[in-house]
Amino acid sequence: MAKSLKGLRKPGGIPASDLSPLVVGLRNPGPDYEGTRHNFGYEVVARVLERAGAELGRGPSRVRARLARVGTGEDQVIYSVPTTYMNESGRAVRSLLDYFRLSADDLLVVHDDIDLSFGRLKIQVAGGSGGHNGIRSIESALSTNQFSRLKLGVGRPPGEMDPALFVLRQFSKAERDEVASIIEDAAGIVEQWPSDRARAQEMAALRGRSRPA
Image (cartoon, one colour):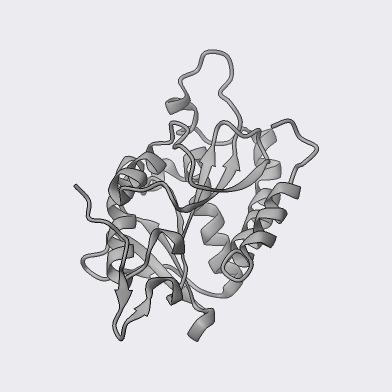
């Protein structure tokens, strides 16, 4: 059983909540998965880093992820993407939280969501996995669902297509024309979240409000 995250403290006795927040963009690694719906979260984190003039680098040997730090002091944020496949995301996130002595409350996971229509964004704390293997893996590894998620709507698969196949396909040409705009809006929300979570949630709710849920 995964050990509890409760009570984690950084050296000197400072509560984990006083440490840098951690933002994780979920993905499957490798060129075969580039541009797929399941890698939407990674694309958002990559755009945040591009806007900040930062790049992902190798993490510590015991951390199963690439990472970058943006900002300094109390304003520093850690951005990361797992080097594991989606269904093992929990191993990567667990190793990050353990290494940096963070709690689940310090975590924002950015990921695709088929239960939101394409273009909708939503910040949610806790809740179920919605069948998302990455989120299910994280909940299992942390033994809690009490962490924040920025959900990126990709819509339901057409007809009777298996959702697992749908998310592993690239966006359609018509969708791809709007993806860049969605990524920009989502990047702005991610940048807002560490300093003002309520405002970030409001920004997500406003994005595509006219669209059906």
